[in-house]
Figure 1 (cartoon, rainbow, N blue to C red):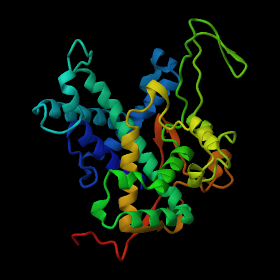
Figure 2: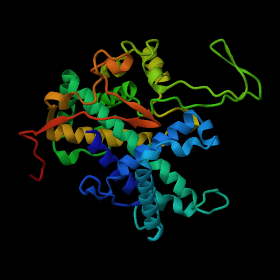
Figure 3: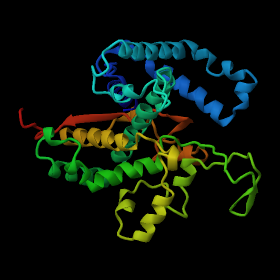
Figure 4: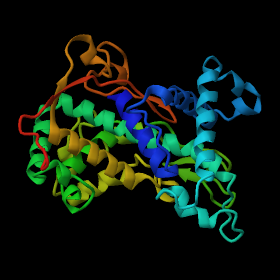
Length: 347
């Protein structure tokens, strides 16, 4: 599912941002973008966690073995943006068509040249993170039959026909679907590492939990640690969508105060709504059309933790993520069966 979800995510971002058909799902030509993106985000993460690498000039050594993949990824980005800039402003109903009237406008302060740097970040931010949520949700549903059955019942009872599944009140009304997505975001946050920040206090020290933080010190807490803190989430290593459907408002408020898969405040992810919509549509349409199960044998354990390993890596029921600014992961491998009554209104 990781591989196919990455193709889907990149295809969606290509259309959404620049009206460009990358076609990774149907054509292998541009699939080199996936390893290229992986190398780029790995480099970004190293710079963010250890900025001294770049000041020392050691950043060229990071991912040197995959330089070709990174350069090819940069090349296709330049091609995508160059192609869009050569087309009429409103040739596509995409992000570019919405911002173009503000480009190179002194009042707005947005330069055309900035599109390049924004595009470099847009693909991992909008495509790669959503891929993680969808892959993780398939993993947890395939290993939690009670949750899977309940979600399937909700979706199949809500939508009479496949064509009915679209963004709107019916989809947002699927409360258990939203709970399943939130629980996947909690237990497997796409950006699981530490997002550093420098507290601002007019040059004075900041006191956090009794500790004096000197001016200029960067602080942060990884989303993974926060989401698995027992002070906020009971049995934090269990996939339990029902935790988001309780009637205890005080407990719900406590959990939401520690729920930060998209970061918080002014730096919160602008693509949050898109992630929920895209994930909800993919899961709802898939479950409406298919039943699925874990692949047999060794294929079926891809993505699981390995018993005997220390910490999180030893939990078979936890989807394994590796911090690369976003997340690197593999699996799950599933077998899909077309439902006997999985017919559309036109079939």
